[in-house]
Image 1 (cartoon, rainbow, N blue to C red):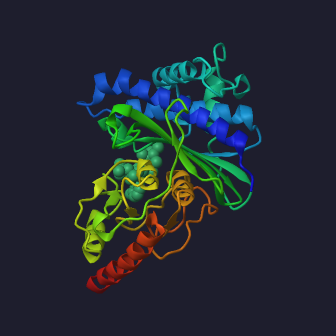
Image 2 (cartoon, rainbow, N blue to C red; image 1 turned 45 degrees about the horizontal axis):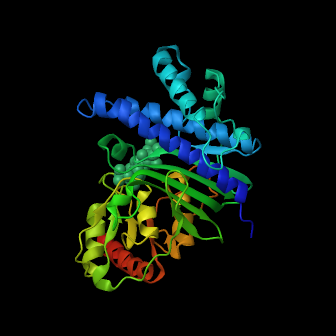
Length: 351
Ligand SMILES: Nc1ncnc2c1ncn2[C@@H]1O[C@H](COP(=O)(O)OS(=O)(=O)O)[C@@H](OP(=O)(O)O)[C@H]1O
Ligand SMILES: [Mg+2]
Ligand SMILES: [Mg+2]
Ligand SMILES: [Mg+2]
């Protein structure tokens, strides 16, 4: 099984630079300007600029690889967006031209003197327009996952994955605001989760140091707690409550934005991640789950939909019809799956 050594190196380096960028956007813009005003523009600036940085680095390392990215530059190309566009270009160039870090190579289009033009950076954002599908190599980028968490100064994640023939091979999740070790807060915040199919999962610092292998622990029934979305619109809190009561879970759920949930599951901060649809119609996006799914699987866990079927990353930009997501260690997963089926039948009977 390929170890995807170069892909992993480039992907970690790209997520690292994007994390520097998003932290700087938060410190410069969100903290000062908008927490009270509720203006979403810093998120947008951060999203676009981080996608530009990651896409530029991927293109320099793997020019033939298509990208499925959340953002596109159509609005930025309009004359009315000139001010925002300039900000994004400046932020992206600041991140691309900062000093080389450990493992960085100039050939990825980074380092001092590597400024890009506005046209190059807008084109880099738009390279994320690949439709996805069942065959070939493709990357997914979610430049800021958990935008609402980002604005609140809580959890968000910079997420990148490599999918080959619909199978996730590499997953990287950068979490600038997550404690490196909840048991040792002195170690500070900032984690990058890294997984390669068949080669395990680990977490490193934001500088790529201190690698720690990840393995989901066995949980006693009394220690089980759920990880779930903060936003009730993104996943059903009431369904999770019913599943918890069927499993006699007494611990309160831990609510956290973004794929940081998958990272916390992989290192045992919580026992299960349950994300059930809140209504009909919303299709989950592949960039919201591909990095998390490989991370949990490589840490020894199982990720399925609510019927126990595998998530299908080969259907296009979405996972298709939404049957939710259940992620957990093997033993907990089978118990949660049974309870989800029971709660689903109860809900149907009531409807
Ligand atoms: N209706 C609905 N249902 C399910 N999911 C949705 C929905 N609407 C949005 N999204 C996606 O949710 C992504 C945010 O992830 P989380 O749900 O884990 O974050 S949160 O806790 O709710 O803030 C979020 O990712 P970002 O846009 O990158 O933040 C969206 O892709
Ligand atoms: Mg997202
Ligand atoms: Mg996003
Ligand atoms: Mg979004």
